[in-house]
Length: 78
Image (cartoon, rainbow, N blue to C red; front, side):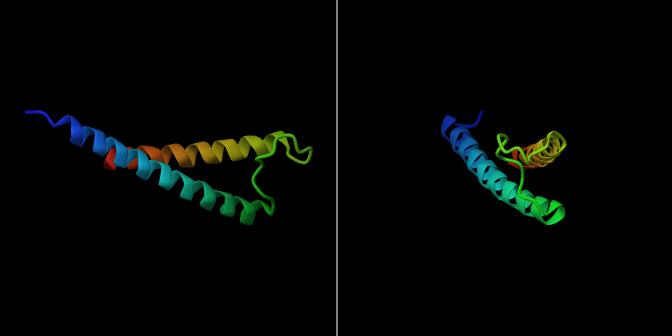
């Protein structure tokens, strides 16, 4: 016998909410760590002439690796 459709939906909803909450928290932590390490705020305004390409790429890689690793772990544990 398979799972009921209702339990599949609620499990997906729980995973989505848990993932969203964890990702928001992780981005805030990552931004805090970035600021402490570099002494600058994360490069979010790409029109700012003070933002360099290497800085932007480093932020993109750090954010991508951390966020996707966390998302993978959350989805696998649900």
